[in-house]
Length: 146
DNA sequence: GCCAACGTTGGC
DNA sequence: GCCAACGTTGGC
Image (cartoon, rainbow, N blue to C red; front, top):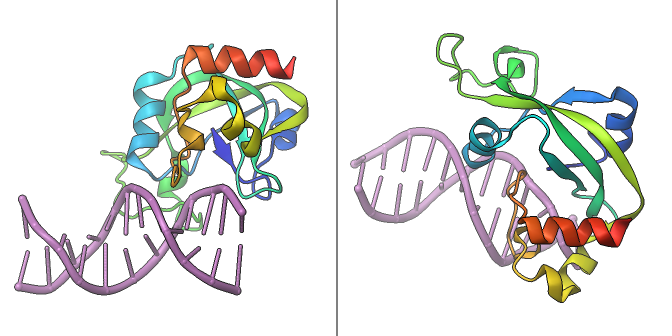
């Protein structure tokens, strides 16, 4: 799960302990949250638009997807006038902090690791903000970071 | 700050 | 239903 640290970082999640992953306005990413994510599932927290960009920690899905309240809030930058109360368009899961890694695992390292070949985030133009990670890749990265 | 890649919108 | 125009993402 990607986030720009300037807007919400792993430290923010550590402080908050849990947060609603609101503001996703991409159907593919929404569908991942709505259809694939189950409480207890783990995910990597990725800092995008950072220096350097990369994986910074581990989180866990806390509760299943619910309606994204920010879509109805006119003052929110995530407001979507096309999302109606009786037919909500956007959903988000609640996530929980698990751990902040001792150091960042930079995108550069993800790209150069032969064991992570084909990982979605290393592909050119891969801007989806929520991406699936294979079990193999997940375990390998955990091993690197422990 | 640039710009390639990608997603969405809306006219037709 | 096509596709040009536009807006956004995000690495560099």
